[in-house]
Amino acid sequence: MFKLNWYEKWAKDNPKDVWGPAFLIGSVGGAVVVAALLVAWGQPLPTESLQTGPRGTGLSVVKFESEALPIEEWQEAYYTEPPYEVGEDEPLAGEIYENVQVLGDLSDGNFNRLMAAITEWVSPEQGCAYCHGEDGNFASDDMYTKVVSRRMIQMTMHINENWGIHVGEAADGGPGVNCYTCHRGQNVPNGIWFDIMPVNDAVAGWAAAQNRATSQSQFTSLPSDALQSYLADYEVIAVHDLESRVPNEGTASIQDTERTYSLMNYFSNSLAVNCTYCHNSRAFYDYDQVTPQHATAQLGIAMVQELNIDYLIPLEDEYPPERLGPVNADAPKAACMTCHQGAPKPLGGINMISDWPELATSGPPVYE
Image 1 (cartoon, rainbow, N blue to C red):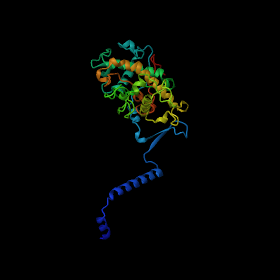
Image 2: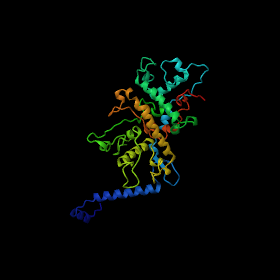
Image 3: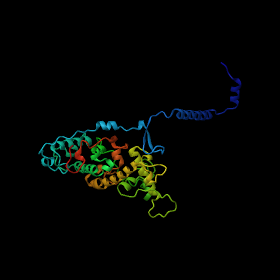
Image 4: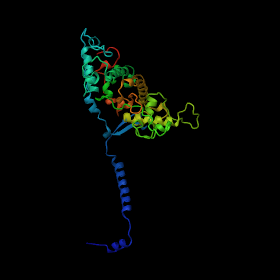
């Protein structure tokens, strides 16, 4: 075999570590090759893009197709059934059954049709017993689940009747909401939240609200009390002033700014969008440059605040201890994630009330 005797002798007399430089040169060279391939051919993973504003302004949401949610699976699992024709002089549910405090204006057939649907949407494994118990006493209010469900039906009616500007007007074809919008076959919807303050027992005040990776801080060092402050306590959502050295009175503090960023981060992850879905990133502060989705989001904030205060928080005394918050034993509350669950429109925007006019109004349903 051919041998370089002079090189072997020289290497033996002058030992050098050639592996470190070789590894560095190989890594840099490989990175340059990969970068050149990406520039020349583009990144190989398919993406989808949603334009959210005028062309040329960079207002778009881009994400990998591999990150797509199983919306089609949720849609296929959705149980729906058109209303039954109501016969003349057909008795109503409130006249047939005892203790029907809501939905009493429905015909017997449509009442049981809706009850069967709610069972499929909320408790497909437990069936009717989840709210009515095993003894078949459907008039009893002993089960907390029945009391809560009744209030949730009223809340659903309220949303469709008064917040169509956010969820879609029923008269304009929805999509509206029903129990499946949040529950999706589960007793407890994904995306509910509790007050988890303090997140750091070793300190007090502002320090106890941040620097802990929690689900409410979106696993960042941002504050974990944004949902409680803004969606339950009605604090003002604002960031710092654009001018320096301005008086503190009426100006958002640094803490307010961080808390607002925490809320915005939560919004983005709840809808799987980035900042440009609502804002023009060249001027976050300028409401003249926001997208139409910004107004929809503002209305969503107001809606969630009202739902938490008027419907969800007052149910605290109805829940058993295991259904209350782990830190402050508070009632579960709602926010964007509860309905959207990672999509700009819940369940891809399918119509949730076209077959269920009973949930579109607090009055007698109107069948087409």
